[in-house]
Length: 251
Image 1 (cartoon, rainbow, N blue to C red):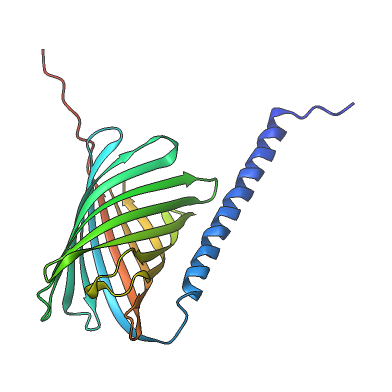
Image 2 (image 1 turned 90 degrees about the vertical axis):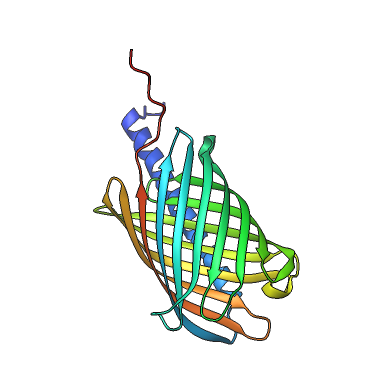
């Protein structure tokens, strides 16, 4: 006759199984990142960069929110602004950890380059919280418009990442995103795999409505003639406003 297993033992076994799955998912994310990095391992020029992002999120219903990111980007000479990104978008949370979004990007180039780029994009993402890690997978489809080119460039962005709580409100974040051009347009280069961004950093919640991030990003770019690797310091602040809800009329 088999001994009876109590609820406490069943709970312990279940927690151990969840922990093993979470660890395996984290290892899978790391393996995917290493595969993407090793695929870009060839001779390349190196550059330095600094990106400073400020994001505001405004939830206005249980599932809906509006977000705005403003990100100045400094390259080579870190004291001089080269690119300014402004990105507003809406997203909707769906059941089972899914999210869909619709957004717009405006990129302004400085230092002798009067080009402007405008993007319309759609995305779907899936996040899941394990016991010791939170995972994220996202696909974004971009339609890119340039002021000096009549053709529209279509690009896909594939991202996988994970966040591991370290305690005291600090998370370790690792993620990798690779870019694929679905058509060939002169200003963006060849069709196919064109860019990779590997990121590692820390996120600290400073208050219930604000968090700060600091990290390093290795950005690889296929410039056809020669590859370029930008070693980028990433600094960010993210704010969240109280939910905007319809107020009931006073009697």
